[in-house]
Amino acid sequence: MNYIEFLENLDKKLGEYFNTQKKFIHCKLGCSACCEKGDYPLSKIELEYLMQGYISLNNETKVQVQNNIKKIETGGACPFLINKKCSIYPYRPIICRVHGLAYICKDNTVKLPFCVNNGKNYADVYENGEITINPVLDNLDTQNVLKDFDFGEIRNLVDWLEKY
Ligand code: SF4
Image 1 (cartoon, rainbow, N blue to C red):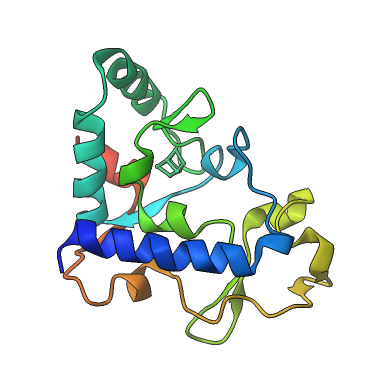
Image 2 (cartoon, rainbow, N blue to C red; image 1 turned 30 degrees about the horizontal axis):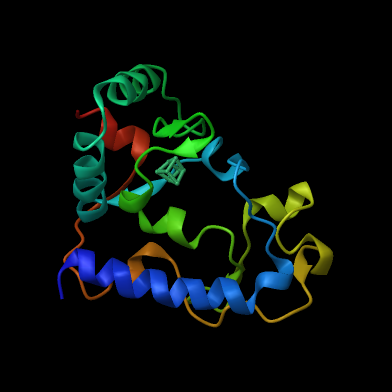
C-alpha cells in the first residue's frame, strides 16, 4: 500500500474514532489552538508528503508560509497555519490527524489532547488528571501508526525546516 492509500484508510478509521467519541470532542472550524503551540513531531515520510502540499499552494500562500517559517520557534505556531486554517490540510502529518482524541499508548498510559486543560475535548469527563471514560483503544502515536512503513527519522517540525 502506498502512503496516500494508507492515509485514506487511516482517515476512515480516525473518522470512526471521532464519531464514537463525539460526545467529548469540541473541535470546530475556527478553533486552531492545537496548531498555535506545539512541536509537531513528524517523520521523514510525513515531511516529504507535507512538502508536496506546500508545492501545491498558490504563490501568495507560499509567501505567507515562508514568512512564518522565518519566525518559527520551538513550541510556537505551525507555519502552515494561515488565517486559523491549515493551508496543507490534506497533506498534514499523523500527529495533526489524531489530535483531539484520547487514546491508549503502548505502556497503557492514556494520551489526552492538551485542550482538555482549556475546557475543550474531554474536559467534561476529566478528573484529577484522568478521564473517567474509555479512550480510543488503539495506540495512535506516530511510530505505531506508521509501523508498516520505513518512515525514517522523527524530528520536530522546526528542526526539519531548518534544513530547508
Ligand atoms: S500542519 Fe496543519 S494541522 Fe498540522 S499543526 Fe500545522 S497547521 Fe495545524
